[in-house]
Image (cartoon, rainbow, N blue to C red; front, side):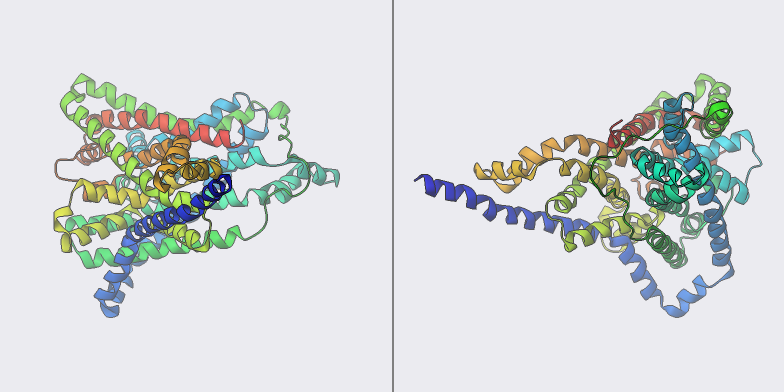
Length: 522
């Protein structure tokens, strides 16, 4: 009897786990197909338009002007962000800079300020600011943390033994940094630069406020002013092509080199460089960065709050916008994280070519700007599923497509830390595959899921373009209310909404910073 029982215990998991994998794969494929709807829509719109009409709309002077603006914006912004982020990351992680922990937090904090609030703050200080220079300057202070975060984490994880060996061969400190340290930062640099580039292509509010034309501003202007769907679709096609070009460039620059340490032992903690007499002069860099990225928004918002007085705090309007924002962030964050669970589980428990392909589809779909996603869902719902037009379901679907990778990364890391044997043990005790997964992996991966909800909610709170185009009638989030008031040149009335967006984003940014420190065991 004991042998029969043992046989049943050993066979049961093998019979049930494939069923769980099959069910999970089906859900993951369905989510991937939904996520690829915007890309399919852009291709369909191009085919329906026809090559002759499409070429007339694409190859015209207006598109050329937008392309020049885009190229210059990316060409100047990303290198400046790279130099700034590398310098700050080295100072805060590898030197004895006074208050390094404080400056590290302040280098991440600008992410709590939405890009269009940065633009609002700078215009409040310099009303005549506009054009390419303004676009580059504001983009740098708004987006450089996307490069600083991975670079700081990379600096913490570098093994100083390689640097010591290079120094023992007679290389100067600068040569060691250029030939040993910088090549090891390639992954962080390429990943952060890609993220910034995609944000530059997708951003609307920042550039609309300073009157700098990009593909996104042109698409929304075309959509809102004349509702010229064909012209907007062709601009969206060019914008998607630009995203694919960035993805290809990042993959080419990243290469396929090994970056892992190979050999016995463990990596030592990085050696802290003594700045000596440059210790306090080096403080000028993080101080200047904090002043421009945080000081200007704080001063501008504070000035307009004081100028507006108590009258601008309309409890009914501000309270309603806050409640609607929190509700839509919670619903969108939970839906996005739930949609990411199947592929996160498969990528860890069943890593195959199919799962890697599906995961790539998720990232590819999220690389498309929010305006393209919104334009696709508007057209699809109007033509095929009219009852879903401007409903909560449609806007949550848009958020899911745009922010799936944020939840996926956090979930995958948490699931990887849960032993698969726990699922097998639960299944061997007679639990169904779904129940076994829920009672073990899902519960133990809850902290990662919470981080995924927080990161997705942060993106939703600061999202403007898709929310404007898809939100149900009567919806007035903090971002929508802020944008409507700034459009009326009521900067004082917009200040409370800007303040609330920053205050409610700060805890989520702290969580992001804490997670990056935790990776390196700090």
